[in-house]
Length: 81
Image (cartoon, rainbow, N blue to C red; front, side, top):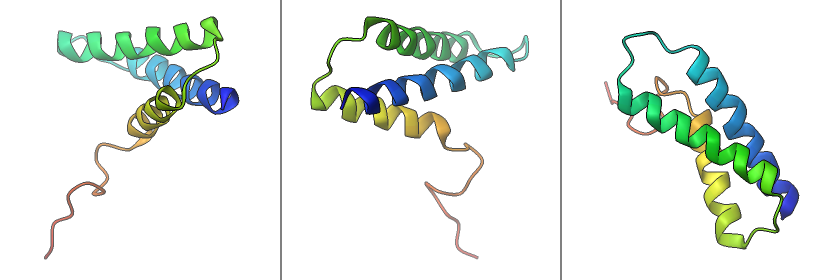
């Protein structure tokens, strides 16, 4: 369970760093702050290294899945022709 949690945190950390580095100067502050909090939280999980509970693992895996979904992909709402 610990390895899954660390893998999820590493995914969020990498995606967060990529998102923060690719933001343009006009990006809204709330978007910047959200990505910054996600990235710092993932780094804290990696540095802390404490054994997680299963709800924490489920939460971290869900967040990792959300940050990996392409926002332009029609996964959530598909339009029917």
